[in-house]
Image (cartoon, rainbow, N blue to C red; front, side, top):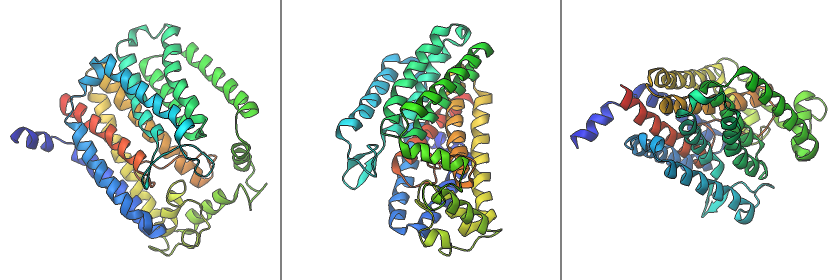
Length: 360
């Protein structure tokens, strides 16, 4: 018991406090826009903190030292992604979630954490061999397979996030500039081919609406236009809890997930948005401290991959709401409604706490 209390005292309570503020802002917004989901979200948050504490007591070295364990997690997660194509119900035209009673489970969220662990393990022992193209290709295959299945759901946002994490970890691991430029060229080629042969019509329409929002303001461009109006009308202090016209009268689509940032901006204004973004900055600052203090490659790469994941999702989601990014259905981590995203972000936080305690 004494050992457990000692470990609890060693937690990064500044990081935990920032996470609590972030998730609380999201919960308050849900209470205002979609109160029917707020109770579930509160349960998810409590469950998330419990998951974080549980994983913080697991020795992070098990992920670094056990290839069979990590590969087993990867294959099991891959099977769950493939199973979506066979067993998942179609919800709003996509096969993205398993239904468990009244709850939905998105295996793409767990895969984001699994990929971070796998890449951190793979490159932690090969960083001096990054000149070998074979390591880039093999690690790319590890990421491309789940990204393909996720894209087929279709979930373009999560597929792109996996690829961004891969490139980010490659850069941190020490990829050569020449190889990086080749990857950029290949990425442009793949995106061009994807536009021509693989993207659904509605995904193309979203991209076109982003480039020219006035082309179809009453159709595909409606959500993003209303989101920008909501953010702009919030002013300094916002319209108040439950008083946002764009949010309360249904002008903003999905104010509980994709456009929750706009709902927060409208009802709580620049002040509420600032609290949220400053809390994210504090949270990421604490992750950077772990990166800087790590004495070996695995913890540094894991923390870096986790930071890339959070930064990418925040940038895309906020960008969608401000009209500087196309709508690709990416939730705001720890804020948007959904148990899968919450629980697995908290899982990553637990592993970070385990790493942090070991490097103090």
